[in-house]
Image (tube, rainbow, N blue to C red; front, side, top):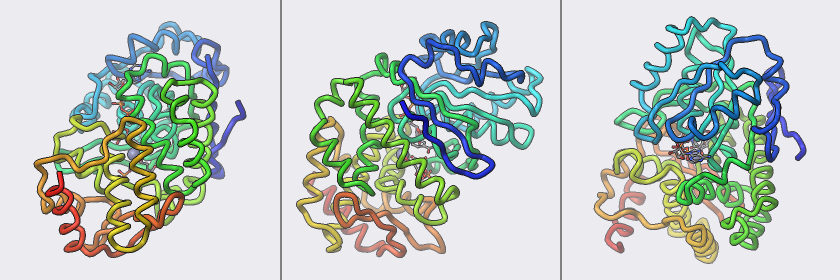
Length: 360
Ligand SMILES: NC(=O)c1ccc[n+]([C@@H]2O[C@H](COP(=O)([O-])OP(=O)(O)OC[C@H]3O[C@@H](n4cnc5c(N)ncnc54)[C@H](O)[C@@H]3O)[C@@H](O)[C@H]2O)c1
Ligand SMILES: O=C(O)C(=O)C[C@@H](O)[C@H](O)[C@H](O)COP(=O)(O)O
Ligand SMILES: [Zn+2]
């Protein structure tokens, strides 16, 4: 596999994608003299922590584990991890190894960003979603009961190590949720990739190694390119938020964990596409194509029942892209063509969502 880099001048870092990587020696980590702490969850730790210890040549490397799932991406768990780091006597030169899905990557990365005002960390993603999206780009955060990722920092990892072989143990629902973020790159910026996903949907669902590695590589390339252009989301990086203003509102309103992040984003992308059609920005044929591919991936596309339009819009106002009381959304001109809509009419959005919920 070719090696990618996130081009951030002095903070440039590699993304290694290699089948079997965790079964070999990771020389760059094995040769590093610093102390390390593996941070993982109760599902991933028993499966892969020992392999990682072997790969870095440190059979005694300490491991900190927490319960799995979005409902655990909290300030309380973040605080526990920081306390643990201090109790272990970790100093500024220590490194955190985030071994897990996006929840672990976001929480461990945020702890690394804050501990002693910032220490190094490495991403070792074990879900498809984390491989194609959350491990790259340096957004770290925890949730508040009021909203998703409301407390966090930009803190880039030193490196990302992706071993697609670990996807063999990923539960089916989690795997499909990851496909939502893969599809997102096609939907926002790469019509050709979107077409390739349509042609290769069955192979991807069967976790065919060649297709899967191709999708991971291209997704990471897209993410690395956007992050290199706009590290802190002053412009184009916001396109990666397609479907997220809707999706995050749903995740919060349904209590974290009811909908997986990828599922909420799938619904959010479809809502953004349909709202774009209603506003005259996109053709209905494109939104039908999006729905068809999301559904083929087994992902939901309808607004869940029982949610009031006003409540959804109120949560959307807490989105980090909003400014000066104005809603900013990523809208759509069709497959491969997302754009940032600066001042969305809240009345039109509420009416659109009310019609969606009446149709359910
Ligand atoms: N920072 C970013 O740029 C960014 C991007 C996208 C998503 N996110 C965040 O990522 C989170 C979602 O991440 P996720 O979908 O990876 O969820 P997750 O971290 O909750 O992992 C999903 C589940 O799969 C289990 N698991 C992970 N790897 C496994 C494996 N190889 N085998 C068996 N079980 C495994 C986990 O224990 C967990 O139960 C959300 O909090 C979202 O906000 C962040
Ligand atoms: O990297 C980004 O930028 C993204 O927006 C990627 C998203 O998939 C991801 O869910 C991210 O955590 C959302 O960020 P937020 O700023 O809306 O919390
Ligand atoms: Zn996301």
